[in-house]
Length: 251
Ligand SMILES: [Fe+2]
Image (tube, rainbow, N blue to C red; front, side):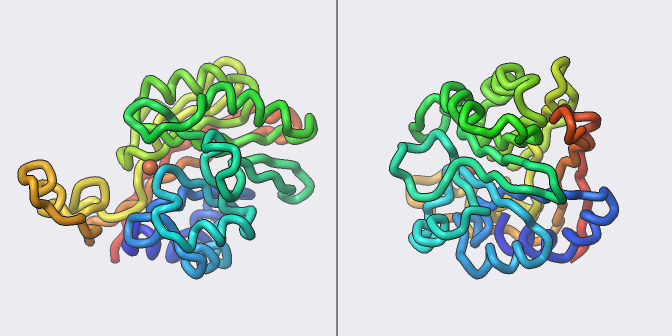
């Protein structure tokens, strides 16, 4: 989320990769640039610093330059259940040290902008993947925990992990579902916790209390890094362990 979150990722990603023996590092990038969308240079900086794949969500096209960039950068994906002609892809596939992997981005429909049915789209995306692609990670970008939990159960045993984003508030319900899918309703936000989900608190309060409020700026200070580490058995695609991280980060 905005500059505080971005700097925290840049400063800690290599260290966290080593500490947790991370083979594939995925971040949700929809709030990268000032809280809204991405710029090509910020994405490239993060890709060069240890991020492998970026997912996104409802804010991905808030900046016009994201449209051209996502067409030529397959490591940045957008919700797979956006309309069919939307620039970019809803899934990334690649190989990590000889293991085929896929990252899938879905967006919920409860209290969210209109989009296609993420459940049916998830079925279609999974059908399109090669059978050898056993490691499958889903970012379920959604507001409602009920819709996220439902997606977790719907995909249990068919993907390695379903982890939620969008609310910026981490939930404490991590577990491995019976068929081997790691699940967490929301990873939470990497960014400043001195405001309201990353935005300046007086700006946001003004938006709730007046009719003339301006656009909010991002907040600064009280930075935390929120993440989840999933250990996947690459021969089966089943999750072995899920660990939630919520670290304070001095800036
Ligand atoms: Fe979002």
